[in-house]
Length: 357
Image (cartoon, rainbow, N blue to C red):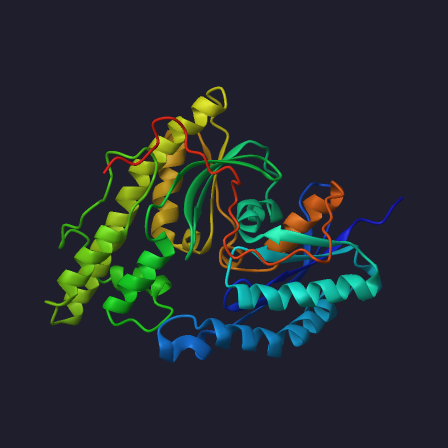
């Protein structure tokens, strides 16, 4: 019997240096042998956001150490690895280049295939690391850089149903946190503040809520937050604003997801199927709760990645690498970094889904 493929994945698209090793399994769900993530919070904290040059330098300093730890923790030898996969976009080009160069070097040295992975496809397939999911399924990808509804029809086969026309949802969380005086990275801490506040204290805008199909907009909401924070004087008012922001986001996603459900059913012969929510913001417990309730009411099976797999990680990059390895979809060592790489390369909206402002 042939040995099951073992894939080493590398992720350096932004400010996480990550390496993971996974092994294929007969049950359709691979085994994560190791998944090492090194954050750069302390590096960027004083700047209130990610500084690309500092992020790239940190990747260079850490990647060899992180890779060695991932290999040691996995319990497998380098010679047992079947292929090397690495993120080649989208992301910060100086950061992507570090992981790509390291991956290509390993691939060349070991004489095994190199596989370039779309970071967004990593998020899209991340639930397959713990669930056996059938195509097609509806995906809501919500992260610091992207907010999209997509029909996932198969490996490399995606149709975008809607996207943000301005800020990504994770960006809206981070900017709101910054306005509230929460230390970077503040987005995940919004929920902590919200638990202490009154969600009905402030009436916040819900841009394009009743138009634009399942497209999203958060810039107007951010502007309203900015205006209110200039008048806030107490901690309780900050808690109330965080709670009102959290509730507003939940309300927006409920309404837009209903539209996405309908669009998905039109594409897939009224097949409800699964609804996957992935990306860093998928870790938000309030959003999870509301979208699970909505899915159950609309006959969709709600699937979220494990919390540790919501943010950027290399296991999801290895997951895509494994799928591509099985299909013999290998890449040349001259594959360049692609900072604006889309998931749906056609990126065409369905008729009627255009934004009317």
